[in-house]
Length: 308
Image 1 (cartoon, one colour):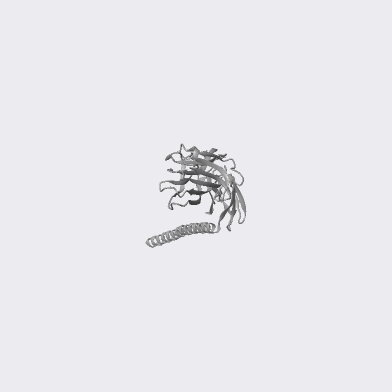
Image 2: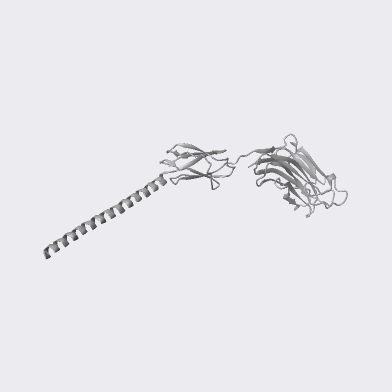
């Protein structure tokens, strides 16, 4: 009886050992299988991210044209405007390698906006919306003042109108041969005059949409050789954005006895302006005069105003 018990025990131990081996094989088999599957998925993801690529071909109004420049299909396409997801955009479902597709934005993006396209495969592309330039004014004054009007005391002075003068003229001092001229202390003051002199040319500009505006113009200044150190002239202009007076480059006399000249150009860009009418003006300002032969002048030419 004792011998039979030993045999039964041995058989039970053998069964347990076989069962444990089977369970271990099954467990490790599943682990290896899952690890293999995960590894394969990672390999596929790396492969897709390496082989996938997308390019933004063009942007026009609300249409963004993209191209699959990779070697695998791209899908789950998303588009962002200035880092904001455009949930209302219409996007292609899938693009095969080399194919082109259009994305329709929920609304046109503004000039300068940054467009970003991403795909489910990890590809992305970024491009800015090109600026839309609209020329509001391009005046070279070849034959007349082109509806600019002259105004005395345009830059903060309040008297001396008899000694301030503006006219359209053809002159070698004009950048293009003809321009808008300003003369200050034309006839000489009746008495010593320390209130300053100024004059300039103005024109209204109308915009129909929200935009920034770029303004540029050429100038030439003259200061008489008879002026003194505290008597100088500046090119001046009216800032379209806020109507403020801006004093630009000038001449402070350094060579008594000889007229001095300064030539240059001014360019500036406003902030974003609402639709409306704005006033532009350019000319010159002279600080003071104490004698009839102390005078100055300026020439304004090639005025270009455009949206950016």
